Image (cartoon, helix red, strand yellow):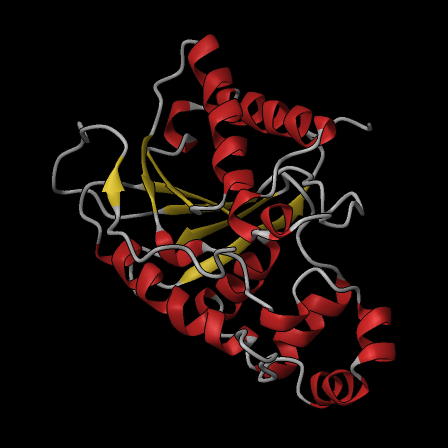
Length: 247
């Protein structure tokens, strides 16, 4: 069973037609559609527990289609021209279904690359174990996480602050990108939470407040605009779900 994605380079899915001169002005982050684990289906085998291989549910596929239709309906000046996608199957499948809707609508499809540092937070030995079960089976680990929610690192896994550290390089590359003005990240709820921390300069208290209010839902959209003067990002909306099917 793989634990972390292979350290492959960021490789464009197709040649990029864009040219130097652009500076990112809009940044979107979409969470993948509902996965089997999100639906409460516990992995039955080591292969099913491989985080990279977890699939979308039927609802997750419908959510991905709805996500694509939402993007296809945006004005051209708001449509992403670049997509950075998590290497996990559920994220890649979400964008594949969404991209098909853009093609069907005759909308220009963004450049796409697989970004290895956009994978979900890895919980190591506690992967796929619900919190109540962790409390019963591993009370010391449960207490340690309660005492330090952002800094706690499960055995063999990573903390939320570890996720923020690897995302910092992704943000730096987006800011330095001179080809694309509107970038979409397709990834996971932990990634979106830590993007908010980095882009909005949230401290620990503010980060935990966002998490307590609710993490980004499946196939939801979060967006930031970049200020032209100081290049900081300001939040436009978080966890937008009005495009999604009820069931």
